[in-house]
Amino acid sequence: MAQYKVGKIVKGNITGVEKYGIFVNLDNFYSGLIHISEISNDFVKDVSLYGEVGETIYVKVLEVDEDTNHVKLSIKDIDYRINKRYNKSKIKERGTGFLPLKANLDAWIEEKIKEMGV
Image (tube, helix red, strand yellow):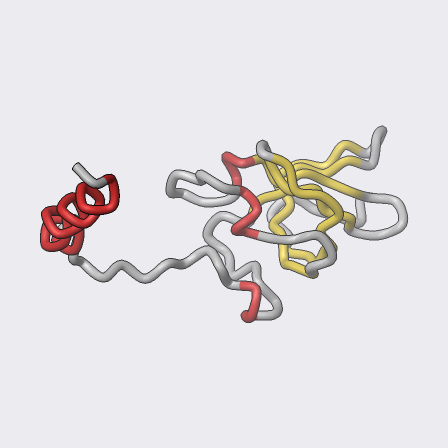
């Protein structure tokens, strides 16, 4: 009988972070991958923002291969961070868009022209 059941949320330790996903060790026998498509419902530009090597996280079991002891994992739609200090993934929007750029662009161009001596 499988120790890890589909749909179960378990703890694991991140052992590797690649462009395509996060590798997680569950115990001495089972390890798995959180594929980039299972990290967030939003676009994931940088996987490393969602975990770092050595971090312990919660993961949801999607599929278990008993022959290879590999598990497909997900962190979508769960509060996966155990230690909230790692939460680098949420950048607060300020709602100003390009306004700061627009407000300063002319001054920056003029400053650069003066530096060039033109």
